[in-house]
Length: 342
Length: 250
Image 1: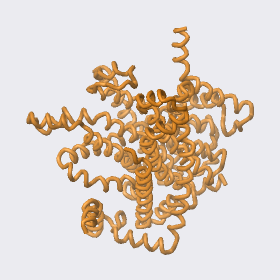
Image 2: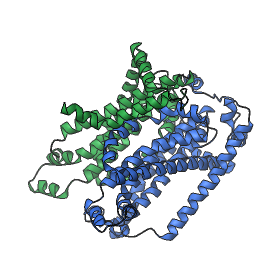
Image 3: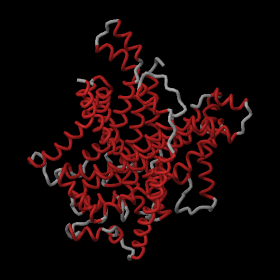
Image 4: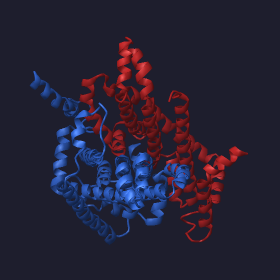
């Protein structure tokens, strides 16, 4: 009985996904849903395989990943030091600034996108600016909240021991605020994933957003779903990695609550150096290869004549075009594709 | 008198910010093509409102955003209670599926929904609702999960009915968390509205900004951005106000 229960607990979470995938497979096959609009899951898997073999998927995924990571790093490097600076050196001013930050955070990055385009031109800088701008606010707010929520007794104790501000930040404020800062980073990742895909759809020559947009334009529906699946996977894995960091960032905390008792043991552990090393390795790998691919795409664009159509065609799709169909139906801008769907 | 002083003091950074904007824009430090003076933006804004052009677009946008947001509220809150641990098995089965669904990118969904529904109001509202649902669901579920055990046990020892426990204990304790979700969702709804309108619409504030961009009318871009920011701030403040009115026990 015990054993059956254990198996049940292990299987139960996957039942939902399993049923969902099965429905996705069966409904189009039975003709309940139009298979042209919703291809069966197996067809989508085949599309993923083809894309992978052509190398299109790898190029576009790593380019998107590179953009998100760089945008996020920029946002973190701006928001976290700013939050600490404001809170440590002038809590009074920081409180006063709350209203302004609140106002600014409601400025939609999308409404400023035209300005970024005017300022930087359509290119990497513009996309990175949009991504970082959307990720900066949640991170800044959570940094400030995190520092404010550090136990004041700890700060006072530190002060009474006459520690320097640097030590105060390093040993008290930073560990205390870290879990909340990471929550902010998670929200920032969510935001920047939204923005990334939108920015890539609006004007890019590569990336997962572009892949999906292009597939929709040339009416390659399985490829559209394949790109969508990969974007979900990318978002989920980023989320998982950050969650993993968050569980470790609580290492200093003693849990007293009854809830989530199973996690207590893990939370006291620090991150092992091997894991950090692996993470850094993968991270720099993505930055290196991603940067490489992005550079390649951009030089390709530059060598082409300045033509909007060419610009959108450039990302290694030439290979894909042979295996699929000629891109006759391709409509480059939004006005035109609106007409098509009407 | 004292009150005006307080209000002035609290909003000092905002006033300073706009003053700085004005000064920098007039000082020929930056290209006026990129950063028009704040006074000019306000004047453009006034002119646009006077001609009624901007007002129409604002109302259309507001309708879309609120439509999606309200749909998300209606679906999200009950779903959140369902996920909060009253039906343990349903919760374990559905949780991973919801995790995945919340990662589904709205813009990808846009293309898929267009296949089925075509470009239209329904498609736009569906996308906004889709994104707004998840913060509400997850926050409601978290709120229900974090209800004080002792209160629940006490209620049971008083032999309260299931419905009364829900109404008198779970709903009030989860309220704060639910409102957090609602506020995040309200932010998302404006965020996405603009994106959706930029991608495929012939009206609304997002379209207005795109149109201004195509005409190199930078002042109008800023005017649109100011209106969107104001709408967002107002909505946020409105929800905070309602929260204060409803949650009187904390």
